[in-house]
Length: 114
Length: 115
Image (cartoon, rainbow over the protein chains, first blue to last red):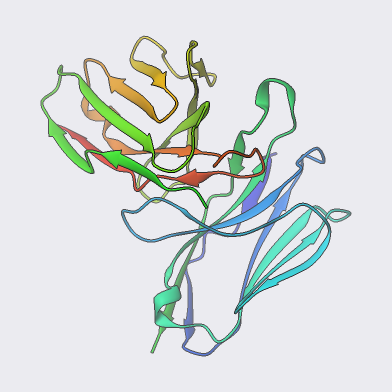
């Protein structure tokens, strides 16, 4: 079983739609939960990060974490064509020799069409 | 967040040559940097952890003699792909934690093409 599962998509939505991106994970020791956005041929850009269950909102983005179900989500409201990118969930590994290291999902390709 | 730069952004080389990629932390003193590799339409795979003033630690399956990492200062880590082959063609990305340990900030990446 993979440590992280993320639906690769592709996901295509009309402008203004609400987008839901999801990841499940199996390692209960993961401590921090992140979402990155990656445009084609660019490095990932940090969008959101949190360490507790619940919701965290930043503008049009809401990150949701459910530790009991080992499930995280990213919601994008009022999606724009500029949101078209690959979205990666990421998890910080537990300490020891893995301290600070991240494990990534496979990425979901999102296209928002006008 | 932290600002990380990489140089070059793109490099094309012949098989058998060595290529050096630089990763610079522009606004933090980074004692630890990470190197990732990303193949087309795939996610990021951690290659190694670069530690300032000491040896890098490599992930399982990554050849340390092929991917040489040097972290001689708090703002610069280099990755040298030695005797590159076409299967080494990939997108190489570095990151650093911006002075904390909660998350990481990534450079813009270097696209390596080995002919």
